[in-house]
Length: 298
Image (cartoon, rainbow, N blue to C red):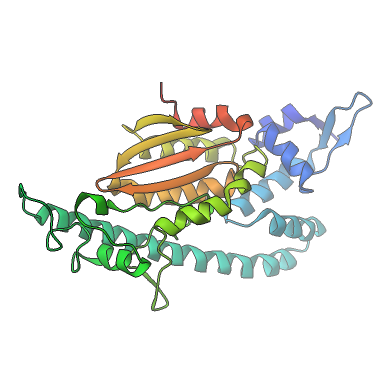
């Protein structure tokens, strides 16, 4: 049987060597060792990685993929099908719910912008009738009131900060939306507390990306298009990008996808009137990857 070194397998499969090592540590991929300690893989590793990549593309967690790999290796197609179907159905339900939340959030933002544009340009102080989040200002106002936030004038731009998956999944992004007739979990100032509670999750994640080849290039291109023209500012352990607020749905969707393949990135979204501030952080080992994807303040 032909043996492949890790660099050869990375080239054949399009999966970075760092990810191959991560898969090995997670029990998804096995390797023999030469007397000198080099990893050596069989030809079957290429097919295994293709299966893992397809499962990741469907949004399956590594634990689920590990279970399915064992079934796949047994060679019974019906068993793989039986294992995949309920998992794909669950992901589909999650994706539809997330899409509904993002659609509701987009509608809220459009309503907020329309209300803002309709306000008179008065020289005097703002009152409750002209405040950005005044009663009747649209679903954005209702969502903010439901969350317990209140403000008027320019100070009512609102902040929606979320960490990691919470920001990316759209839970931080649905003022006034609904799930099954119930209010969506609107994360305003409370999101900061949630972010603090989960602050260590991304720090402990391995600095490895499960995307490779065309998938990695496509994701990179989507990010660069989404953040084109952003103002970049250094923040501790990362970067802040300031963008027009109408890009928030696209940014949240991309952040969700990025968390699936690169959990070492930490995303925080802050709404500030017409602006969206996206803060992205990574552990020290992931600093170069962060710069490659999002650029630098310089």
